[in-house]
Image 1 (tube, rainbow, N blue to C red):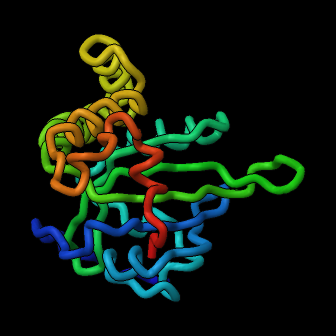
Image 2 (cartoon, rainbow, N blue to C red; image 1 turned 30 degrees about the vertical axis):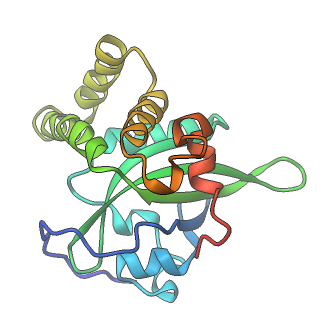
Length: 205
């Protein structure tokens, strides 16, 4: 599909943040499946999305190094979490935390990836957005390698964790602050963890 150049609009798209966005890709990132929440949120039809590279929704505010870390981790056979700002068809944006899992065939060969995305608490966005802007600025001025070196040094010196661990920590900290009436008498999300957050629903569509 030949996607026309989109004008970027600094406006969040309206979507049901109680739902989970689900997609499946092959090992090259080509979309094989998109649920209704995905197509409704990104403003493309499912038919338009299938067969397209997943970067059809990549927002220009996202530094490339984040996706490099993502793919490097998946290629090692490890699951991954990422906080991503995505781009809709009309140029709007939406922030999600993504849980990537690896799909294998009966012989254990990696055949693709499944991604489940949920809305990101505003507190997490406020913490991650300045870092992404710095990485993007370095990328534009000094190149992707310089951005990667800064990212690695930042995680080591200021966080002391891998990117995946950093994301989980940020997310769980924010979830613990945003307890609702629904969960006051239940086990808190920070104890249940991200696995509950992504798979606790009975119907992700």
